[in-house]
Length: 267
Image (tube, rainbow, N blue to C red; front, side, top):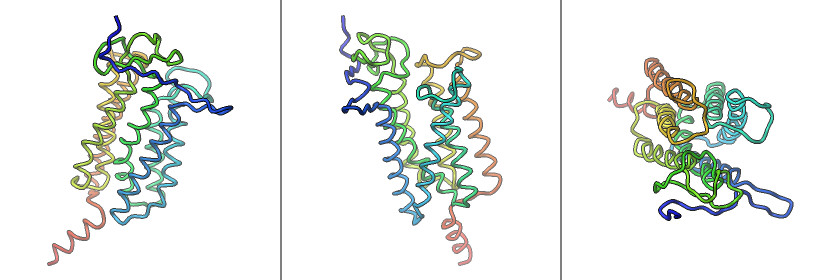
């Protein structure tokens, strides 16, 4: 008997417009990048910062996401380096983060650019992952829970359109929204520039560690944990150590906060 408590999606994974074929995954990622960029630019303008570097940042994040995601997938599962199918979030997240940090450092930009991008990132990811939900990607075990998804279209990527599965894409959407909910009230309250960026890295790493207990698309590595979970542990440790090192180097608040503090001390 069909369980009507689960989420049912009957949308085809691709849209065919004559000779043009659009995949929902690509559409939602593009929308996520656009919305994330707009959110970051608004955050920067509110602090009277130049938004021009965001164009370079967007290109670097996209490049890092594609190249890093594909490279990590090939290292994990094998296959040719050049391909249009098979990417991992962790690989893209790591590569994009490295490129962003290098660009901010080499261009001598304010560290707050990292915070602006970090604040917008969860929303962009949440929107981008909607395509995974529609396509039936990153599914887990068969389930009848309220968050289980039955992708009823025959072209969906789940094994059986008649039953529901745990949907990793949906959990990633919820994770992105949860991270944003944590960040938003803290956006002007953290003590140092760069703290928002470190917090985003830590929250996504910790959240994805638990999400992968419900997904079945990462091979087991050791101690009952899969590759993605061990990668999350490594990223979380990196965030904790990185933030600690940054704090010890005395990276305090943004320039305006330092100026205000100095003025207050002199009065």
